[in-house]
Image 1: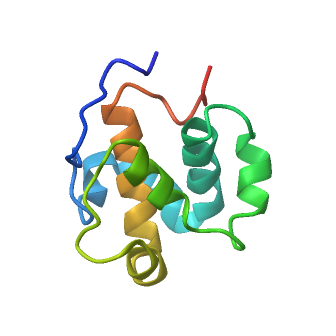
Image 2: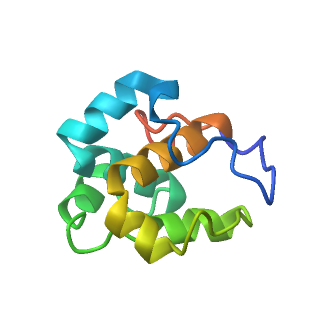
Length: 111
């Protein structure tokens, strides 16, 4: 599953669309390292696990720029650093939704 929805240049959901996936929104609010780890496992194409990525969550929160780059997504509403620093939960939820909308299931990883 996954690789079929390579739509370049557009986010499929907005930064503040957290309620589009309420389960992930709750998970991200309670335990953002899990959402980060799941997203990173797919973005890194399985070269690292959800667990190892979750452990480095507080050291690295810029995985979104790699997702954005991979799909030629616009850097909006502001640069990656500001989005992740000021709206971390929203940015993680948006990345999770983006991966789901592109045919991945972050809950099961890159399988």
